[in-house]
Length: 582
Image (tube, rainbow, N blue to C red; front, side, top):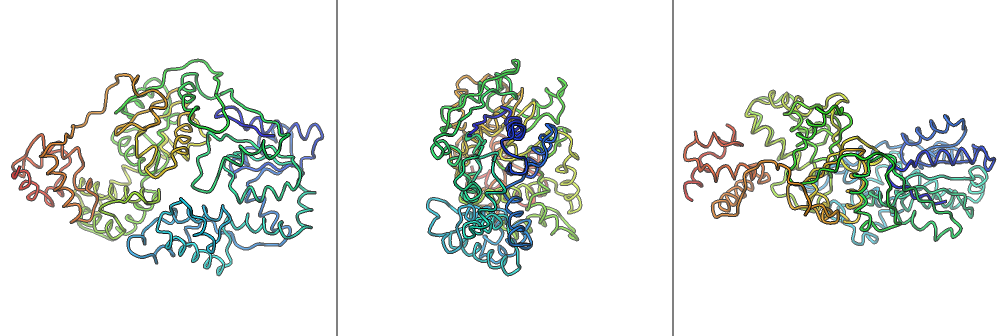
């Protein structure tokens, strides 16, 4: 059976009731049924729901847990499981040349997972790259992959992909073990099938053998993990592989209002795959708010005043790098928030660690440490997502230190005050990927613009599905906004021309005049000299203020927003000379 379950259509309820029916009807005893999920949390929820239906004994677990159980049964203890590849990759990454030395271990780990999920080894990796672009040059990526495998094996460790690969190889070579599995496990249900990769599919095929007792449940419209090797094609190909398969489409949505669903359904013609059009079952709600330059903070305030708890609101962004600007905005507005935090990410953690015991002006110390940690003056496009986030975080930390113009102790206190999450309370801040499977009364999608959603290097089809996931998280209230060039996905929604005339966020216009061009050239030269991104010197808003005010003295320059004492001291004389030469 192939169940194509649209967003909010009661997928988990359908799965549990089907398994309960299999047991109650006598089709299979519970101990012969395996329900496979992608997270321990999902497996726990499935077990709890089955328990509520009076069903005990069904194996509900992840692919990795099931594989580990088989390895232990047939081969004994397989060895120590590596909880995170970062443990080894941080050490390996420190040996890379130049700026690559500081690349986050997470980007390197994602690349290794991409390879191993395709059943590639260091010996076959380069031959199968094709159009795929690693986060670092391919020769360095291969070097990291090979060294990672060497160190892991030398320490007697296994990663999660090894669990699946070793189990697959065991069953491929051992007829008796394969027959025992076929006798022990007879019926399979796999949740989130659109996220299955080649390695998982290979293992599932070995579990199944020549049988067809499989229920695959998923939504190709929510296939957003291609960067790990997952492919919705395994789900879509099931009816071809099993011609007698019964295909069921779940399209009745129990989560969102008709207004939210109508907007999300506009993307359906562009999503491809197996057609599914969500149908609402809930009462009408407010129309989604769509327009440029809308203030998320003001809309949060309005909904809060209307009685909606902050915990029922979420701001969903494409990358972690965007969460810190909302952390600042909510802090300034005295609105509690929770979720992804600047302080929890690599750049801030490493910089705060390096600041321990340091004294003196924060601006100098933070700039020095940021450059030492690999802050790039010009950030190339071909960077992994985590490295893009790290670069943005380093630049933000430098800017914050310069704006504070205080001592190191003051800067550390400021970071904890401004970016410390509110102990599980407040508005949720998280990425679109992390939002999958979740829901809120109100969802805010900012920065729906070219270069952001879709990201510059992203698979456009997968980025479109990611946008769809964001839209379908909202139960009742939905806001979509942008500041730069509107995303092509907005055209596909057909909303740009009809966008309501709502108030835009005020910001000085930066026209392309000779004065502006001269300032931009000066800024770029200073940025290269200081080895920092141009916007760390001055952002466009400050340049616009400089053009509008044309300060002639240090006192006038100090009154320009965005120019604190540290920047006045660093750039003041040079900047006044530049302005005087206009």
